[in-house]
Length: 186
Image (cartoon, rainbow, N blue to C red; front, side, top):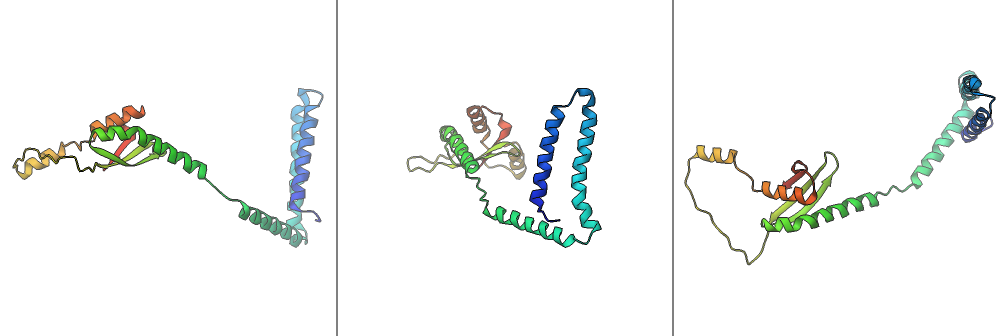
């Protein structure tokens, strides 16, 4: 077994290319299935010979050395690969900035500013984090104060709107999507 695993794979690759060209130039379609069967058996035989040598002969050590050498080569090549996903992250950041730009004016109408926008793939949604606008010019306005019982508080809170529903509708309209895909966090 004086050849390496790579040489073995090269030989099988060359054989498959030759077999495909032979199959292309055969006499007719009527013999095609027989030729394919014969080629399949020949490829299978080429795979079986080295495997048979592992189990039936005493030269196993040489084959295992070749397998280990090939594994080391693969590991060395893998160490040289630099996995960079900056383009993907850059695209996501650009998309978030674009969405933030579209929604800032709408949020401003409701007295909020957009802190962060996250576009999620699974499940598909746009998460918008908003905060109250801070400005020295704004006046604090206090609505009419009512004194109510604890029961009434529970009922009002159960039916209370967080105040974001209208903003959520406007965000969905600006992004041309359904409201269910918009999540507003404060």
